[in-house]
Amino acid sequence: MKILVTGGAGFVGSHLVDRLLEENHEVTVLDLWESQDVSRHNGDSRYHFVKGSVLDDNIIPSLAKDKDRIVHMAAILGTSESITTYDVEQVALVNVIGTIKILKAAKKFSVPRVVFPTSPDVAWLNPYSITKQTTEKFSQFFNKEYGVETIALKFGKIYGPRERWSDASVGSPFNYQFLIPTILIETLRNNIVKIYGDGNQKSEYIFVYDVIESFVRALQTEKNLGGEIIHVGRNKNYSVNNIIETIERCWNREIKKEYVKMRVGEIPLEIVLDNKKLKNLLDYELKWDLTNGLKETIGYYEQAFKNLE
Image (cartoon, rainbow, N blue to C red; front, side):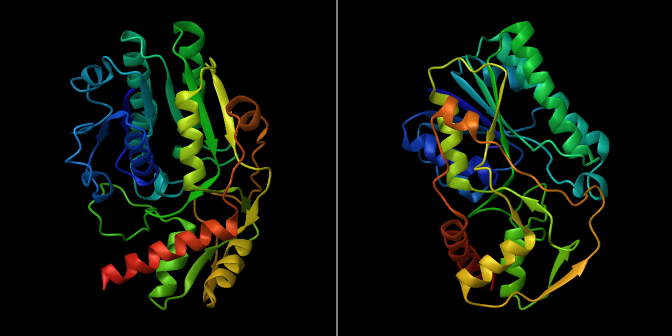
């Protein structure tokens, strides 16, 4: 297939690009930057990179034309960062209007399917969470009124190799603070890790290879799943303290930590995802448990830290 991946230079996007090329699809990446994780495909005739924004009306139509699928990942992330770091109007423009532009292009050129990630239903009042809930509604609207087959995959905390930490000097236009890479890099630096709240807040943690398998199945299924919102999880969550303890056990080293107040835009929650639709609609159950996923992740960041030195 010919597949457009917006935001394809990022953490999850780059893994998906790898997988799609392995399966001999033709992949066009639209992103604000070309990361090392995707630029290594530059010699591959099936890989095309376009530098640009999902807000650019001069780019989107030409990229959507003749595509068999669109995976729309481009977004400004970050729960706290969408308040403290990035302008709320920019977050809304990129995440909501950018999504609408992609869906309009899919409608205009009759792209058979658009797949995109979304976030858990939470009571957080921050621009990121609000925009993701809004894009879900717009995807269902475009499916119902315009016949655009949209599939939303709802994830908890995605982790694994290539996830960025807040001060990673990798040339990205946006950086964020995510729990697991922050724990690993700060520990390798022999620093104290700041833990927000009491560490008892819980979420599902999904290893990136399971995420990619879910995307591939959503792209390839012969079922019409238009308007579906599919939870990608296993009905099992972990607290931040659980994550720290498991890292210590897998890594055989102590995490020095300090508990501080919750970040703005977040409140302690317990997030769990019902995997019924994942099994029934995509015929998939997650394969990577927390221990194996963390072992794979730790090895990556140990090597990344060596490269920083």
